[in-house]
Image (cartoon, rainbow over all chains, first blue to last red; front, top):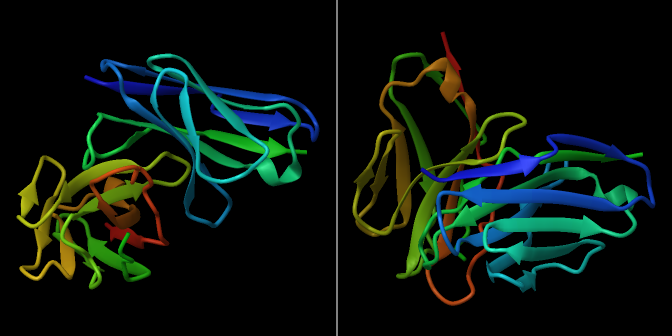
Length: 113
Length: 112
C-alpha cells in the first residue's frame, strides 16, 4: 500500500532562518505531489504541485519554493522565513488522473519566532 | 469549482448513523464530490468521492441526489473516533484543476 511521510512533525524557527521540509511517498510511481498550508483557523491553501521530476507549479506568490529532485520526493524550502510563514504544512500525493483523490501526510506544524 | 454549503456542526450518538449533508447547487457536469475529514492536529483523511452514482467503501457511503445539487455522507455506525471536521469538496476532473478547496466543513461530535 502507499504511504506518505513528512518530517519533522513540529518545528520552531527564528525569523530570517532558512527552511527545508521533506516529503516522501512509498508504494507508487510517478505520483502527483502537492504542498498545502493551513493557517490557524483557516482552510487549506494549495502552495505548489508537481506532476513529475523537476516540474513545479506555484499557486500563489510567496516566500517559499518547492523542488522535486526524485520521483517520490518533494521538498518545501525558504531562504528567509517570515512571521507570516507560520502554519501547518501538509504534503499530499495522488495517482495521475483528473478525478483521483489526494492523500495527505500528517503535516509539519511550523512556528516562527 | 462549485461552492459547497455544509452545516457548521452536528452531533451524533455513538453507534448510530451519522448523516452529513452538503449542498452544491452550482455543480457542473464534470465535477466530482469529494469528502475528507480532519481530526485535530492531523492531515485531512480522504473518505470517498463520486460523480453521480451512489458510492460505498469500508469507511462510508455517499448518496448523491439525481440532480446532483446535494449529497449526503453516511457513517453507518459512528464511533468516538469519528469526531472530526468533515469537508465536502467539489472539483472538476480536467486540465490543470489540481486544487482541492477546503471550506469550513462540519464539526461532527460523536457522543457516548
